[in-house]
Amino acid sequence: MNHRTDTSTKTAKPFRIATLSAMSILMIAIICASFAVNAFAATATTTSQGAFSSTGYPIVTTTLASNDPNPAIAGELLEVKVDFQNQGGQQSGDITATFVPSYPFTLVPTDNATQDVGVLQAYQGASGNAQSKELTYHVLVDKDAPAGSYDFTLDYTQAGTGATETKIPIDVKTANNQQTITIDKTILIPGAQTVVTFTINNVGNAPLRNLIFTWANTGDNILPVGSDNTRYVKNIDAGQSIALPFTVIADTNAAAGLYKLDLSLSYQDALNSSITKLTSTSAGMYIGGSTDFDVAYSESSSGQISLSVANVGSNPASSVTVSVPQQPGWRVSGSNNAIVGNLNKGDYTAVSFTLQQSALTSGIANASGTAGATATGGYARGGNRTRGTGAVGTGGYNATLASANAGNNMLLVEIAYTDTTGQRQVVDKMVSISGASASGNGTGGFGARNAAATNTSFLGTYGWYIVILVLIIGAIYWYRHKKKMSISDSDDEDDHISSKKKK
Image (spheres, helix red, strand yellow):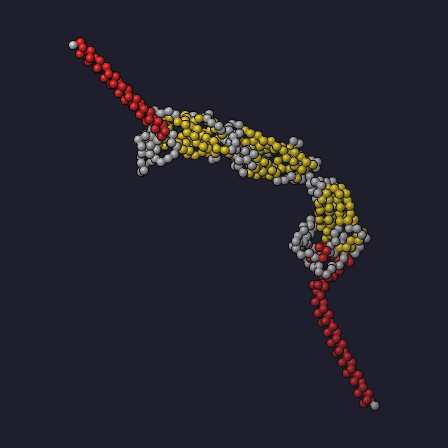
């Protein structure tokens, strides 16, 4: 009995060992299968694109829904929207996504790095839709980031799995907040109101926002009129510009010369709206330039006339010369040019010329024409000469000017001078020579010329009447003379017959 008992005991041990070994192998197989399933599921969650699956596992994909602006701008705020979808045949676990800082993207302080996606239901098939959830992140793009493509990185997890990293490429271009300021005028006439336009050009590739532009002159020789020296602009897009007009006036007592304008432009920082950037520069504005003159007839004596020339503008004039150019109706004896020198504003001088009025030449309009009318290419009576492109008469002037000269004693005077900028300028003036009257009583040939003009006008108007009247008077005279001769001959014949009878 003892021998049997020992035998049964010995045979039971191998059975237990075999049983334990089988159970171990089964456990190992179960563990391996579990690892395989988890590995497959983990592999499925890293899929970012592909066809929808009808498998029994959740397949989570991530795509870039949008980024604004697109492309992103270095130094600017960027809004990124990421879309999470379940393309598998089984609902996902609870998903949580976390933003991972990576150059050049930095999360703004007001956003949470970790956001909840939740559970995404299984894909419903061809007739249904994949359930999705969109997350929004606001990040700052480093202002020194070179242009290129950068990865926007997220780590997300779902219940029962480890973290999965996803990278979404985003294009970035270099932020370039550059601007230029131009001015449309560079010369101001003292005492005259002038509209000066400052133009701000955004030559960078990022918008300028909340701009404040100001300008100033240190000595207050240039000041704005009707408003202050500040303008506010809400926005200027990249590549755009905006014009800012100001009405300004230069001090009448300011010396001619170049003056400095200090220009200032502030705008909102793209990275932080609470920070304001400031750009300061300067520009030159010249006070001075051209001037104007007034010419008046003073007196005449023995064919010589005197003219008074006054600088009535706001700037001095240098190297002033006064001349009488060739023109119809007038002839200059001797020099037709007089050198005056310098004339400050408000100064005047007198010049003299020896002039004679001449008869109108052929091709010039009759003196009976309307004086002072302006024709195309002609000159207005009594004012500055304005050159035109119309037909030109004898001596470079049209028939209208000849008519004006004939009926109104208008003389063209040309004034040349150098302005404060060093440019040579020419001003033409029409001057009325009042000493020459239509009665013909002028001095130095003026009266004779007017008489001739008047006679020409009278004959031109009444010539035919005079001819007809002369013919009528001649006919009457001839008729009376013939009748008188007939009566005389008849009397002589009667006397001859009577004398024969007496004999």
